[in-house]
Image (tube, rainbow, N blue to C red; front, side):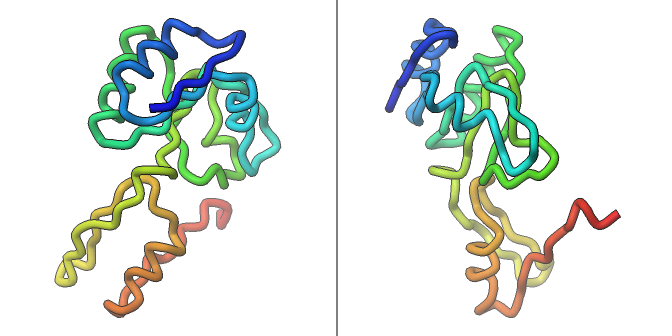
Amino acid sequence: MTIRTGPPSDPSLATRLGRELKGEVLFDSFSRGLYSTDASIYQVEPVGVVMPKTTTDVFRALEIANEVSLPVTPRGAGTSQSGQAIGEGLVMDTSKYLTEIGELDQEAATIRVQPGVVLDRLNQWLEPHGLFFPVDVATAS
């Protein structure tokens, strides 16, 4: 576990998350600055960032945030062009550890993946099976 803190974040929240999660807890000014932007024009500095290593980390971070009425913003690669990957509460970055590609059901043409899987990697994995995940372009309409 990694914990980095720095003002003006909440050190008691950072300590608790660091104690209860296996993943990384980043509350220092530099990390909050990095996570205050995405590919959009917006900038919102979060209270802190967690990088869960397990699904249990995800659940526990959500429980703790709920207990203190702190909003949580899930984040993958931060490529949002509309500001969805930033928020003033706790940012949960799944791109580092939650990247497993799981069950493929050829008959139903479905696959189970963790939230940190990026599209290019998924399509490379699907290619030998004659499948691909098409892009759903949000800016098309």
